[in-house]
Image (cartoon, rainbow, N blue to C red; front, side):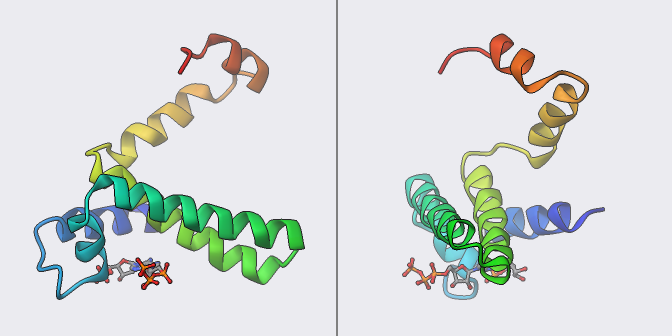
Length: 105
Ligand SMILES: N=c1c2ncn([C@@H]3O[C@H](COP(=O)(O)OP(=O)(O)OP(=O)(O)O)[C@@H](O)[C@H]3O)c2ncn1[C@@H]1O[C@H](COP(=O)(O)O)[C@@H](O)[C@H]1O
């Protein structure tokens, strides 16, 4: 099992945890909109480090982005395995062909 799967399993378990006992449980309790907002904030912080070419900063912000992506997916009951399956499906297709065949929206 990968670290992403381990983390996704932990985050899933936090859905029924006491918000006072866990930062993840507290964020999930605030609802999917807040989880999406936090993901957006972390993504912007990663962008800033990338533009500055701060490799150490980008590494830690990228970890924050991945964690908050998993929380956002959990908040909407989207399984990590479904996202990974979508990536696998795209393997072997060029990015341009992939974009042309993707549904709008
Ligand atoms: N990977 C993470 C992780 N990355 C970031 N964070 C938290 O995300 C928060 C983001 O920082 P911010 O400064 O934006 O948060 P904040 O200012 O406290 O919050 P706001 O007031 O802005 O809402 C921090 O409080 C971090 O603790 C994480 N919290 C948990 N994990 C993982 O999730 C597991 C379960 O965590 P708990 O649910 O806290 O037990 C942990 O063992 C870790 O593996």
